[in-house]
Amino acid sequence: MKTPPVRTITLGLEDAHPLTAAQITWAANILKKSRQRLNDAGYEVQTVRISTRPLFDDLAGWSANQLLQYTRELQQMLDETGISYCSLGPAQVARPAFPLERLDIIPDILATTGAFSLTVQMADREHGLRAEAAQPIARIMQRLAHETPEGFGNFNFAMLACVEPGAPFFPAAYHSGPASLSPGLQGASIVQDVANTWQEAGRSWSPALARISELVRRALEEQARPVVDLGKGLAEEYRLRFGGIDLSPAPMGEDSIVTAMETFGYGPLGTSGTLALAAALTTALKSTELPTCGYCGLMLPVLEDAALGRRWEEGRVSIHELLLYSTICGTGLDTIPLPGDIDDVTIARLLLDVATLAWRLNKPLSARLFPVPGKHPGEYTAFSSPYLTNTLLR
Image 1 (tube, rainbow, N blue to C red):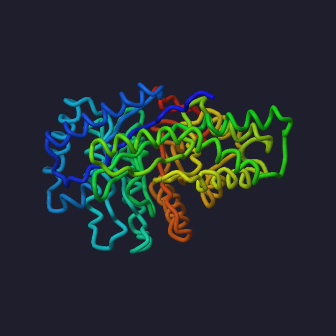
Image 2 (cartoon, rainbow, N blue to C red):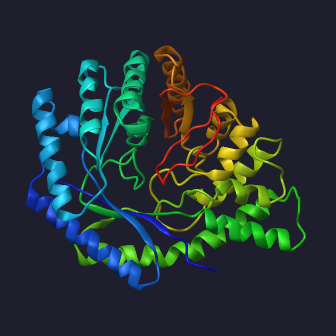
């Protein structure tokens, strides 16, 4: 069985903003050495990333111009150390005192820099759901769609709801507490290997969902334990906390979690049985004996999974099905293509649906939506990014 790619090694920084060049250099050196250590052990490490404390918490008294200047300087520090990904954390608008007008700076930061992810947390367990934040967040998505090439700025932005610190996957990642190291797998291939074995054994369809959960759990533990051991060793060496591993079977293009799911014989994604199978896989992800962090759940990103993009095009799955699956797995609505002329109110209502699910079910969810400028229902997206697949707008 081939080792799965490591999508990310994420270093969470304890230090508050404003960060210095020395702090970024320290983090970059640890990440580069960590990448090399995993490469030497036979793992392909796709990215290394820095996750910070929430920018808007640490620099609450700074003006918009000061924030812009600082993020440009921070971008230069990252460029000089070869770090391409850095999360600046969420604006915590679920807190009633957070001024919504502060959100206007987010598109300006993301449109003028390349390394950063920024998010907005619209619901949390302490304060509940702040519904009036939905339309300002929708306007951020609209601005990023029209003010960044191909609307790609929305790749680095999301609405969060009940998302805790410590996740290694972007854009949701942010940090709290002592500096830590956390890997995240591109683990769709692990589920695919189990599904292939299932199919080869002649189990084209079976209601034995508990058996699927057990087989996937064992495969995850077998494949991820060496990464965990390496991560723990690195954390100890550099006097960091090991934050855990995110086992979410993240897809990328044709390395598809949807193809893996369909191989189990429950039919195309979106047909009856999909929810039950998604629950079985989620059970596997949540029941390992490994130290975990982040979502550690089933990810169904339409524009990152080629097979899911085809099911979207065929009309087998829609936003409503994805919301349904999010009740028992998933990250919410992730990389969803939308017509370019969609209005703020429609986007805001989608955000409210996701945030309400997260708040009522007490689980982390997010929404990363892609209005596509100049495109209408019935037309195809035309993203040039290698990170995105293309599909039909509906």
